Length: 453
Ligand code: NAD
Image (cartoon, rainbow, N blue to C red):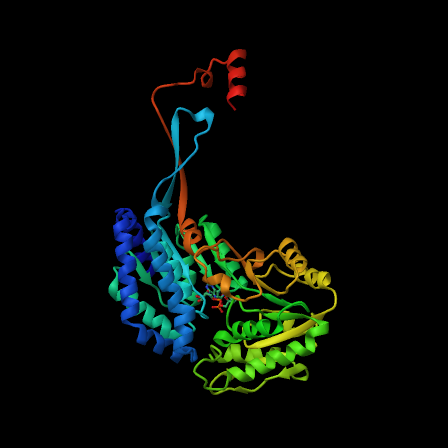
């Protein structure tokens, strides 16, 4: 009931047109940034309580991305909101043609737990920049971050403009019954289906940012030291709980042993020990048990230690893994890296193509032909050649999945397009009426029509 009222009040507020004013949007973004900056310490403490995520990681992978998005919109909003003049086709002359970035209205953002700040705030920032109202439903699993987000937004902004709704499945189910102008969801493909189905009932447009199994491929031509450094960093960041982390590794057989050794050396060097400030715990006991259940202890090459009290799982490498193993049947979402090897690169790509379209793919190579084959043959959300994760940090690249890993994009201009409707408008002069348009028709008019088009 409470949520329905907030939804209604947001509809009414949107219809006052205040959210569309560019100065109002900018002022909101500046205010939001100031609130976050003024409460940074509390934001760090809340996420540490939830899953022992350290300050550096939280700044790098959470707040930094939110600040960056705010800065992008403050810098580019005038340009983005200006009606875009396009060519006017001959048949529409005399006249002009423009595309207006029309705010959608009342939007709902549903977030996943693994990056509780940026996965809710970046879409909210985009919704604000695009002139909408927004209700955010963060994940209930990290409850300290959820409560803090609710406090910071709900005490500083009117609820008919921006509101954080706390809660889990019942509250989300309630929200999904309402006729939003847009739903932006981040989470698992399974819940994505529920959201899509609920949205379909009201023909609500959706963006789905989902997950899946993202491969990292290392061929014999790669710079192995660099590959090991970048793969270890991205795989074990956030305790392995990153949607675009390499889920599994495909390494060319001839360099497999050498590469395994490099991975292990790198893990030891970093010191991902229980209690290390830069190593995040597993979110809850359920996921801790699930991840441990995926580890076949006979295949451990490195790692495997765990601590139920602190929900610590050591970075773990599994070797000689096959596509039939349990760990290859679901998204791991934890600090376990299964390593599979290949002798034929084309066949390795075929195996990726056989599966669901990945959210990300990473290739380490020095061979242009291998690079071209990956890019031409494999459909995936986004990725890197000779790096990992960094595609998410660019203001100029769309972020999103494809097929089972998602629908739609955001970040920078792509997010702006996602949260606006591209309204096409022809403006005509009142002179220069084409006679051939109107009945009664005859042969001469038909000739004209054919010529004009
Ligand atoms: P989840 O799908 O379990 O939950 C996401 C949100 O949906 C939460 O807010 C939750 O409260 C809500 N929810 C859960 N069950 C629901 C139900 N039955 N009905 C309605 N709402 C429900 O996902 P998660 O465990 O929070 O996150 C992990 C998943 O998210 C992974 O698959 C990961 O790859 C994906 N992910 C994707 C991205 C991306 O940008 N593509 C980013 C982070 C995480």
